[in-house]
Image 1: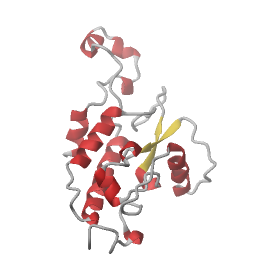
Image 2: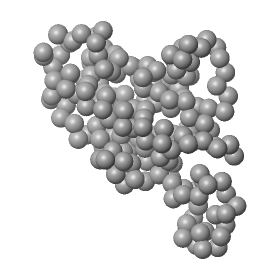
Image 3: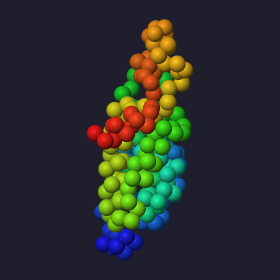
Image 4: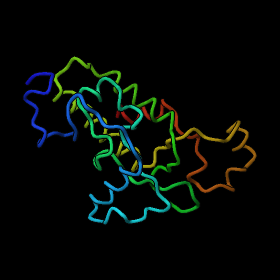
Length: 182
């Protein structure tokens, strides 16, 4: 199998798309594709949730993503996450851009050798996507904490006034890298 388009069986790809031609990301399209994959009409409301790209759409021009040609809005690259609220959820919370998460994913892609065969890269991206998805499903945070001087915050007991999911230190690259290296 070559590193180009020849020999690629698009019907059996792990990552939907066309080699060399990644698509741009659109959270609305992703959300509609997620709904459709659940057997729901694309017009169904997902109020209280946002569609999260597992491999962030901002990375669609990364050399590895470009080479494998990822369809960024395919339902396999998404998950509905609740927006921050007082409701209990084991999922990560989502509201817009998440630089810590994006940096971790970019660094993981940077570790891949872009000169490898497309099928090899596709498998590596798929495995990364599965680990990231599991982390998000398990509630790993996507955002840094907005609490200044977190040690003092805990000592003062102010943390007891917050829902348990808002009490942590927030997302760090180290936290996500530890998760991915498990």
